[in-house]
Length: 249
Image (cartoon, rainbow, N blue to C red; front, side, top):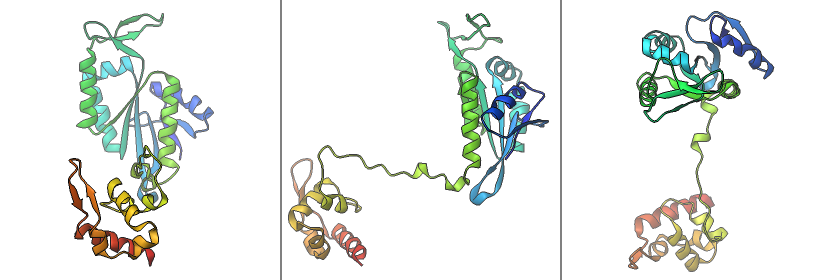
């Protein structure tokens, strides 16, 4: 999956360091965007990935002129399935809220054209939330290369639908160790800390819990946050019994 880099813009200087990192980058002419490659969509379908790369002062100029939103990003969205705007540069704001950037001598000075930090952030939020462009801030060139490498690998290592880390299930560690019995029982829907404790006291073993009738489960009693006794109930008991017996089979 070759990374095509437009040679006419400042992004051309990314080709050599990307190649040194082991990425297949080469110069070409792109109608829109600074970098582009084919990614792996659902079930391996080929999709086009586009990246607009801008240094901070260049970004400010294109925002003020309207060229970024009215031409570059509009074309980017039409040409590619997924689009990123990568912004490189360190900045901060002064007491008046004006964006400051470092000069070649390391001094902080107002960015040209002048812009407040709030104005800059709001315009980029609009591009992201209304314009459909993913925005990524990076401070220096090493950060740019790291992000581009990660973005390229994400889209080319495996198919889109094979990325599943967003589906991870969180199991908080208990403050006190719990028994194997309670780990098994508490994994069932509607069975929490108190119910698993009452079940362990009543049935002792997982085998007895599996063999218990829905009526025995329904009779389990716990206390609520106000100390009031509450029976488990027939609906929850029937569900627990169904799951345990089906697991047994």
